[in-house]
Length: 260
Image 1 (cartoon, rainbow, N blue to C red):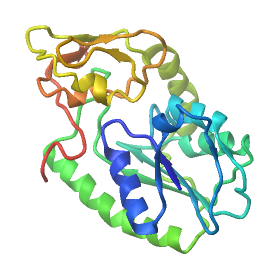
Image 2: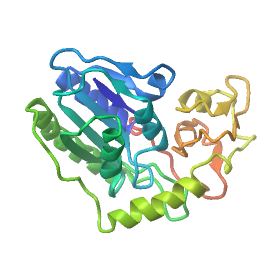
Image 3: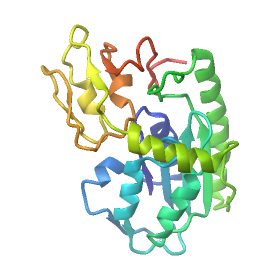
């Protein structure tokens, strides 16, 4: 089985590719969180996790899921994790490995894929150019073929991938600041003159943080569930959602938006 979380589709694509090529079933983490998160493995079934990197860490929702997760007969089953990132991963896998260990789960292999950028919440950050998006996707397809082969051979891969130059500072200091100060929905708003009340933003929000739907303008709940994943911003067909002044004149991205 492969547990995955995705907001703009990068990780969904990777997880679907892994599922198709390994024969493992897919479980969307937000859906799993609605239940008890108790699982039993079939003979030979592998345990996989796929998630995007948020501020050089696994997303808050993914870490909450791991705290709930219980797999009855995990010992002896191959366990791997793959993260996607627009740049470096920092200590994401080290943090994730520690979280799994608290649930008596141990990673045999860790992987990462460099994917198109989707974080637009700071002045100096925007989506990639079409050329860079194309290059990242093409390289990811090549890299994923190698990852599939390693998983099917149950290879051990201990080295944490693509950690960058200052992994501890990025994950422990900057990442902590992000989660305390920037991971919230306070800055989201809708441009009334552009909104067509289609409800797409509410449909794509992975934490159900948006009130509204067809015929209604979106409002954010401000209840602490927002991951600042920008799924609402990127999927809005009218580009009517803004994040304070940080997203003015910035692009949108979700996997498949640009037919490359």
